[in-house]
Length: 516
Image (cartoon, rainbow, N blue to C red; front, side, top):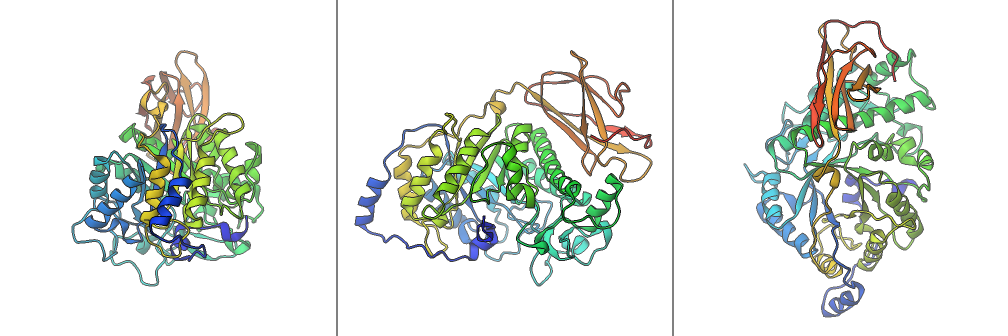
């Protein structure tokens, strides 16, 4: 897709659409009644993303207004941005609270939203932009902000920001740095320990990307050192190094896996979702075609793999397309999404900021229809509450919410996710640690897992932090070891729906097994 389609939430906030705004009045209400023919009520997601850098989330009054607006639209889930540049919009956080002066002293926006939304039967998903880091001219006010220890002034492994192949450092952390992975996972999985959220939504769970060599990222010093050690290479990897591309892709997937399993261990009912890239003018047809897409090549986001492995519950492809100019592109992506859910679920993300009401209605209608193979999505997620109706002003538009309510006609529950509510498989996770030896000894090590009833053995690998995990295991007992046939744990039972902790603490590093 052309670079203009590579939109992020900061740029969307400042972009002024040229689309004609619909006028208000009785005539419009008559037209809307015709446009929004009531659809049959069915269990489906009717969700909205809500940005935190507008006024929709900062005071009790604005939260109340937002919930009422979305209830009017028959919304049943809110994906609320609760993190921005390593600061939080919730008080009980491992990171500093937002510096936004619009938030009243002592007010906890997330806690208040959960209470208000749950009263109306609306789910709350904590939307977390993962890799964006501090990007302002002035440093953070709170000395606890990680920028002070891991910003551009830091050296070696302590510098967390990502770097282009030409040496340009930008305000995103690099998932290839082991400290970054540990920090991000700890921050994100801490949220459900303190808040009764229904889901965690991962945004920017990828490398940043743009056009040209200056926008190819991943050359963080610590990440390059890890890559060279793991591959026996030296120097700076070339831009076209396929192994380095695979390395970066794996770092993103490893982070998703760790967040998913650690969240599941805290509360099995929590739904983990991710915002997914759909930049190309034409969606892939097959799973193999996906490896030719921009998201896979430039952002290192292999999201079909996440659904296939089961390390997200909901994928939300950001299928933001202008209905007039790119209808065919949207339809090709939606067709791929409907047919590639792999036993998990997909909601399509639609860019309502790009389209007038009639265009959005058409996109919703096609998104909820079955694919040619008869497969359906689980619903829609609309971007965004703050920018509706293709209008120039960045404000919520009650006209749109009324129109959406007319279209959906009846309230409905979110779909039941059977792998969450009636699970048939279990999961295991843990950390490999060494009391002695180099600090990287647990990085990308092979763990062997044996199933008791069949004696089947499979290999899994640790991530940069020593974390390992396996999803959707048949109920049985399992044991683990660093060598096949030499087991370090006793058999332990893994039951449906549960994530069982296995820790491997070794005295010293022994001869390395082949890496998977």
